[in-house]
Image 1 (tube, rainbow, N blue to C red):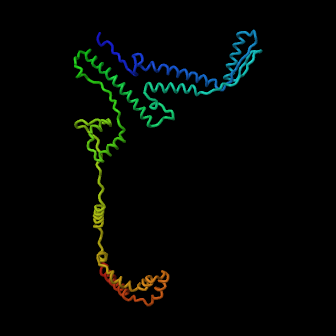
Image 2: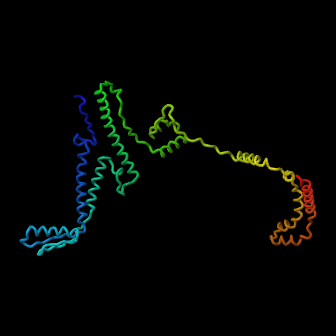
Image 3: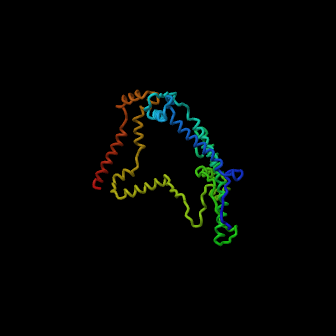
Length: 339
């Protein structure tokens, strides 16, 4: 009967059919590992315990021998036992040795199994000596190569199975139009480092990087028609200092527009100061101080000169200006007292 059976013959390793499977390679490490585990368990059970030798008298019965042997076993676990009269027990040196040979055997078996199945060891275990990131990446590449090889072999098997199912159900379709069973075995790049490298290339002036290549390397599908895509949020531009200053002035004007105005204060604010006359009057007062400092006098000596010449200072002009200012402010205050 056609299409009665489908057999997938997987070539896990090179060689004849009997040698291409994993069982023939893995059976010996599996057997040796279990032997080593059993021996290690027995070693740990008797480690540190003294060897016990029982002696029985000639002519002892089988019952006496069994009682002596039971006493030897009991002493190894409970440190207590009874023996028939006329028998002796000698204690020899305690069991010694190391567990390293057993552990080395188990480690070798596990590393062999990892190499056969995964093609590497650092993708599944670390020995603390050669467990570096560079070697781990190399071993991961070997694992990926085995993955690609397995996928290619299974691709042919599943494609043949699809053809068989269609033909059994009465569909005569040419192989060119048959559905395909494809494994995605692409080695996807790490998105953080890859995007940084592409960004640097684009900013440096490289204009020959197609978008389809970036999608393929990162494993990001190309959006279909009318499919929603992610977009970066719009950046809100911050206003310039000049615009902020004008805005705050407008807000200040709006907040103070409803306040009551003071004509006297507005007159003072809008009035023109007369610093020239006041400056000229002050220059006459501080002329001795300036002259003393220009002659190289110390500050204390200059202050003594000011104090000594204070009675003779001509402050009439400054006094007149201050009297006029006080008079004007008093009259203005009286005129606007009811405002």
